[in-house]
Length: 432
Image (cartoon, rainbow, N blue to C red; front, side, top):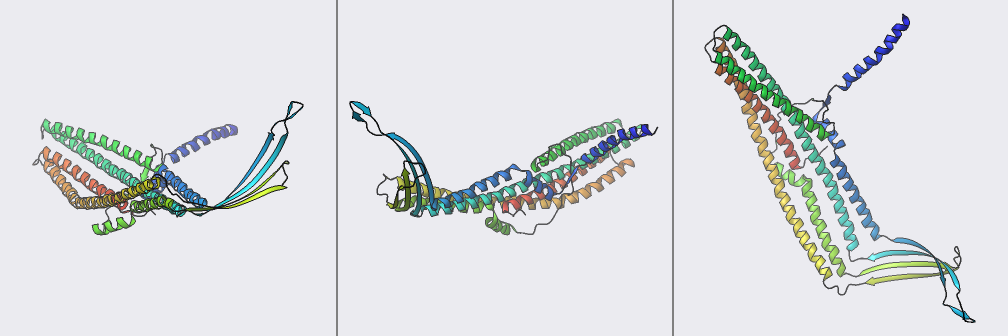
């Protein structure tokens, strides 16, 4: 008997453990907006791409610095060759030689007309552009995740409104059917109520699908599997925005990473001109070589050395340098025009999202009042219908009006919050 109990216990324990594990695994992942953004920064491939680009730019700076420094080269060669033929008794004879050669060479650029220095400064500016690109990438990811997060909240609230509307239509239909059985209402009231319920159920199905898609989009943005079950522990809120449009525009021009990037690109184009013009200047370089050679591999008995200081100056190149200088001028003009265009685009984005945000703010106030009025209108319509002094159409219209008012309120909150998030991105608000 005791053995049977032990056997049963051993069989049941894995079942209970498995059931407990499944219940734990089935629990939804709770996410705040901050948690979602942090996951996106961790999992989004664009962050890795931006960091890799920055790493490349960093080593480009080191490469440019290395070109300006000295270089030391070692060369070893083994040679086996024969002499010119000699003749002895009309016989052709050769003498064979073996030679081992080792040399060390040192070279150092002394003056390049500013070319090497400009290349270093240019590489540093490209590194700055890469750093700013990381900031811009993070701001873009934050804005996208925020929008997806708010979309889940919007569709979740819309789903609740749709379910509530279906429940209201269903409750009203039961009342109509009861009154019809009592002979107090015509058959047409039952039919119209059933049609309204069917339409509400169709809207509920769409709301369920919209919510599922919104969850999948958020999961994809933050790096979770598309079918992950999540629970958002925040809701759409209204917080008044205090800054003026002028303040936002000034902040954007001072803090938007793209503006700083284009200013750096203008400076890079200016350095292109300096590099091209450096060919008009002479170049001076220093070199030193020590060479050992002998018939034996390790012998250093024979050696010679060479020290040289070389200066060169371009006298005529058929207009090659002039062409490069003119190309750099055209590149500078392009960079300046692109910077002006980017400035106008940024100011337009700030104005667009600022005005859209305040338009949504006004709708929040009016739609909130409309929700309260629609609730009261529905209550009155239901009381009048139950008393036999109101019509079925009055109740159905009141139900539809309440659904519309609540949907408009949710939409206004969503539009306000998403436009606010887009405004932060347009202004270049730093990501913490």
